[in-house]
Amino acid sequence: MVENKIEQRRNSLVWMENISKKFGTITALQGVNFGVKKGEVRALVGDNGAGKSTLIKVLMGVHKPTTGQIYFNGNPVSINSPKEAREIGIEAVYQDLALVNLMSISRNFFLGREMEKKVGPMGFLDIKAMDTICRKSLHEIGIEIRSAAERVGSLSGGERQSIAIGRGVYFGAKVLILDEPTSALSVAETRKVLSYIENARERQLAVIFITHNVHHVYMVADSYTIIRQGRCVGTYLKGELSEDDIADLITGDREE
Amino acid sequence: MRAPDSWVLKIRRMFSESTVAGPLAVLIVIIILLSLFVPKFLSFRSITGIINAATLTGAIAIGIAFLMISGEFDLSVGTIMAVGGYLFGGLAMAGEPFLGFALALIVPTLLGVVNGVILVWTEIPSFIVTLGTKYFYRGMLWVVTAGTMLQTVDRQPIYNIFNGRLDLLNNIFSEANFRNSLIWLILLVIIFQVILARTKFGNHVFAVGSNAGAALGQGVKVKRVKIYSFAISGLMAGVTGILLFSQYYTMRVASGDGMELSAIAAAVVGGTLITGGAGSIWGALVGALVISTLRTGVVLMNIPFIPADNFEAIVGVTIVLAAILNTYLRNRK
Image (cartoon, rainbow over the protein chains, first blue to last red):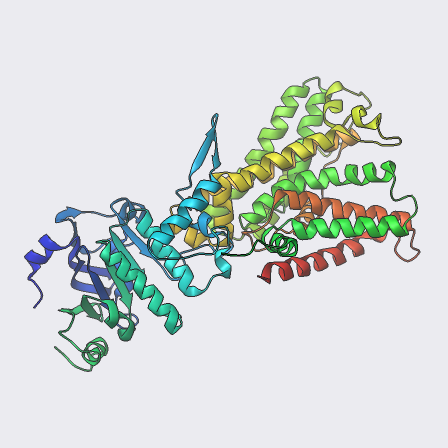
């Protein structure tokens, strides 16, 4: 059985308690409790429009919650922008907005955190160093690339996804949020991306895996939080539910 | 272990990865064809003529290419160039050439910033914003100058700095007419190419032009990058105004009208992607040279049904062909 609220708040790396979000008169989230521990893959599952992305946007500081409190390492925090989220170690990998297709792998890898060589007052990109480090750090988490200078646009969806994950890991993310990382991927590529997620777990990262594909998440998740129509249906540990149970809870064919 | 790449593979990779390789090949092919079939084409006189004609378009195209890579257009550069030309020429004629030079750089830069600020505040497409400011700036210029044309016969030394004869080269090559403006142009191309390809800011320009959402997600200040790119476009228009006045000693309110389109043409022929995110400053220079070479070729060939006045037809065909070639090269792996 899942721990009670106070235990969860204490034991989770990031913990969102009693989160509600209203947009005008529309209630998008109602008293949702959600969190993830170090070295855990927590699935956030729900149908389209259930409130998954609103919840994650609250965590990333895009939306301010109407009520509720976020805890990081047990301490209350307020996150007001994606930049602040990143500063405390929360990194999100979005499906289409992760990488710049026309740029090289290493330029993407270091985008916004470029390495520079100083020549007097001027700073120039240290492309050689960036290429080397990019290649090496992706290799360390099991991602092989042909060349760091290759354009991202010529890679497959799975390769792109894995580079975005590798980037988060390299830059010291403590919480990795993956938004539908396996939708639109082939079976072989899905398996690969799932293996990178397992790798991230082994490195003691907290992983939030957002999806509506029960089958993919069932293979890696340690626990599930199911939300429907803005409310938390429940949080379950691996093995408590079958794939069919989860699917029923997502669609509301069965009430707990 | 991978076998070392053959030179064929290396060249193929160069074509698919560099945006300037394709346009450069086009330029070389055109030069070879023209020198084979057009008598008198391969002389220092016509070559320096081609270069001089490409200088002004090339200078303005530096800023335009930079801005297009960031994903925006600037239709007001022709007008801004006239503003720069008036400031430089007017003040030089009034005995204040250095003040004129400074203002011809500062004011156009600020006009570019105004374009950028309107764009990021209103989120109206840059095509519309700068179409508006193109006419607005021109109208203001008309009011301030009362429509008077600048013209001078007084040959001041400052004009020579920008467009005097480059005798160092002219003495070596007979009949050559190299100009100082070539040195300025090459210097500016190098500076902006380095900024674009080798600095953090340049990296952000590419990212913003290709996928602004992803750039924002990585903490790139998208709005600031856009405003700076507009500032560069304005600055280069001002520089072009200085060069133009130094070359012709004259400036009218209507000067530079249509130059924005030649500059966009040069950038596109030079491999800059209209939708942003790819291109180079070298490429814009090569694009300006391609167009200028074709113009000279057409004039020298003396084709009865394509008189020099009808040169636009050739430019039009070149732009479309270049766009097709660039798309083909880019989509090949």
